[in-house]
Length: 331
Image (tube, rainbow, N blue to C red; front, side, top):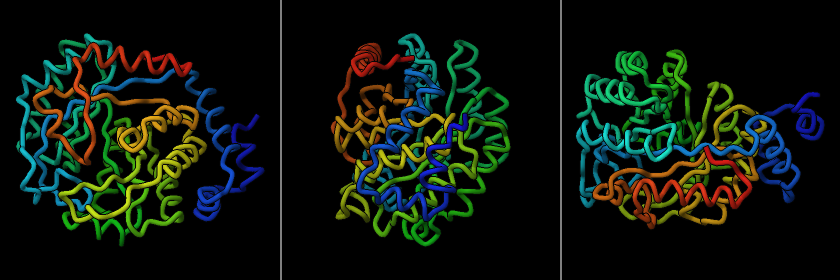
């Protein structure tokens, strides 16, 4: 039986127009149900828990929505040493995490050799999977890190609309971002991208094209979360994104990418903790948890939020209990 039959019969071919009309539909319940069915058929009730280490909040970019932008003079900057990064990753593995996400601002202090040595050190002492999220980097850098054992690379495109992208990023172009993503895919990384919901001047048509771009890129994972304004950015006065529209976008992405890893993003929980739970009925199968050391974790503020600091083991157990209460199997 064709798993897309429901989608094809009711909505026809997935085009920007059909997806946009779905995003705007008064009743979305049948799509949520179908996305949940597809997710269960591929992933069962398993939810993978990923550990995030935010190892640097230095960034050379000036993105209009991000609290780590290079012109924000109020943020207290930090960098973790390679030894701290490795030890934190190993602690996460001991706590039960099977994947660690090494995330930073676009900080060129960490050369290709430094990051390569971090990867080598972690892999030599554990079997944990490594996802990198360090911004746009060169073919030479990306290739070296893949050869050292990096498994995945996450680089969100944020918006597929060239005009909207240009207005948000005075420090880069959409062409450059997409070129880097295609390089990542060509290097055989498990490739992740994603975008924000609720950016100023964003339309349903743009969101629909964002979803189709994930499919075009062949993404293995995609982070879709609501925009949250930060007080030290150009968009400080903008309205936050819709949690409902975020969930609808995740559900439609599940229809088009049945095997992809789709996380319940941290930003969704910032706006509404209940929505972060309910998204597991809408197609999501992954959740992230910060394991950044406590002396750094509050300094990595892409958007404002109340960060609860527990030890790595307690954080993991708390998340497992929450997932079990939802009828899910944490992994």
